[in-house]
Image 1 (cartoon, rainbow, N blue to C red):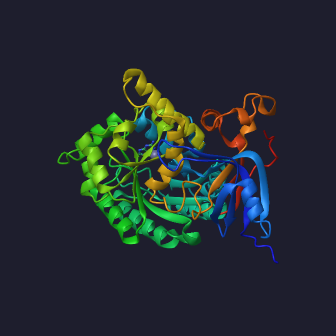
Image 2: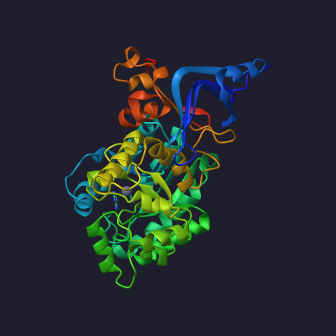
Image 3: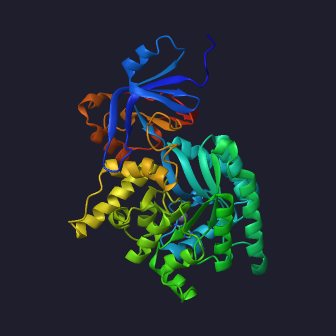
Length: 447
Ligand code: GUN
Ligand code: ZN
């Protein structure tokens, strides 16, 4: 019988969190992957026996950990080279530290950096990312080409801004150029690579966009059934600016609502300083939130009232928000989410605590839900597309192989080690649709 290249089995310690608050795990488990999907999930010995007569190629990862791929719901391709820069808050930071970097992200610079960026995502165990490019068409084109080649699942869009843009065009032409280029990119890339690549219309935020731009972006997103991404209520000074620009709006959220920007395919970055009216409006529109805790701490923007958003039924994913967030590493973003809620707990002891299993849920199944992709990704369930990562626990243990044994640790202990100490040094392999898109250069030590 000819070996089927799309069929393989992988053995490891399986961990996922399909529901907020619960954790599933299987020591010495295994997954059969066929045609890019999880075909069967179970105990290694059982599956091995059951497939004795089928030509399954086995990848034995022993006691390495297998998680669903991590999902980054908000990050900026042109900003990665400027991480950890600046000591100011949002608006001066954008002006002084970010716009100069984004302005240069075109031509050879964009073409050289874009593949490195997606390589970094894969090395960090991120399998799906929702990303902003710079305002230039070629920066987005370079991003899409690199995304397609990387094998990752990527939703990307050209940054749109027509008020105080860092671009060189005359203000009256900026709007039409922004719309024409965005539409052209969407037509070319939305749904490419059998749907692995998608487009997000990307009006930056209400401070930098005219109503006409925001309304047109929302119409385009609807026309092409594409995503829409923007920033909302991240910083007090930003909110004050929006209030002054839109005196007749009820609040910041109302500005987006009036422009038709709140839809089930909308990803709203941050959402820190919202009233209950605004939270209800977002919930009613079934729009989604990208919580970016490491960014919110870096820019001292605020502490997300996560419990309020979850109670209202909002779909919340996590975002690295590089370069306001200093790392693409989603384990560190999960840690940031825990730290933010711990900081709130110091002042409000009655608030519900956020546990590692819940932060992990947000970075996997929660992100999938926020992107409307629950049927495809986010957990290790038969029928889903085979996006997963293999993590070397020994690389995270204080004394590696010489210290505590994996059998002595609970699943919650293991997950906490990943969140508090995880990163690219522990990623062994990253898979999207069953294709290995990253493999650690040297075999790391195992438990
Ligand atoms: N608000 C508008 N643009 C940006 C950006 O690039 N980063 C962050 N963190 N917030 C924004
Ligand atoms: Zn952002």
